[in-house]
Length: 155
Image (cartoon, rainbow, N blue to C red; front, side, top):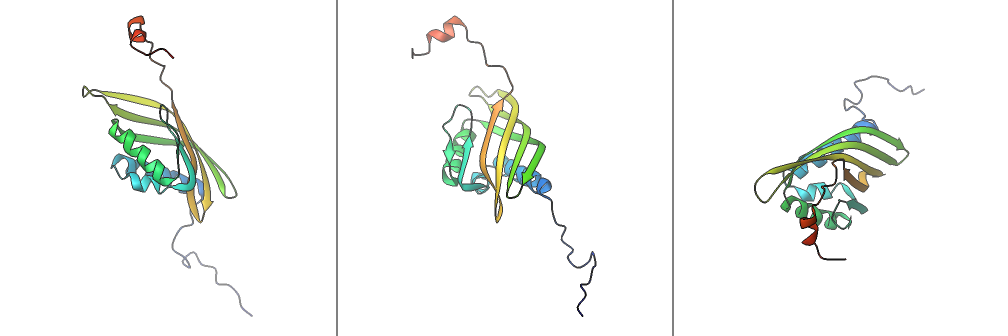
């Protein structure tokens, strides 16, 4: 009769739980973004994944996500930091909630630091991939003076 051999040495690779996997993928996102490897960031998105960034149109699919990442990188976004607060998973779906900070280099060379919250939805398609990602700033909307408003075209 066959009896399975039970030993912790049978497979030395640890099995990662979903929460650890998502947290590690979030840090891969950060590292790839901060090093300008936008193709590696976009590879984390499912074919039907969507990336929703404030003040930009939503990007659908990895190629569009890569183009949007190039745009925001060229707009001065750098030094992204993510802090995963919570990961909830059920079957092949997972939700990640967290906080972010990102530096935005201005045309005059100064740096604006934005901070806020984000939400990512992940789906396991063999590997965990992002199906939706969005963030919103926690900073107050700048108040425009009357002279600033005069420079904006009427709607």
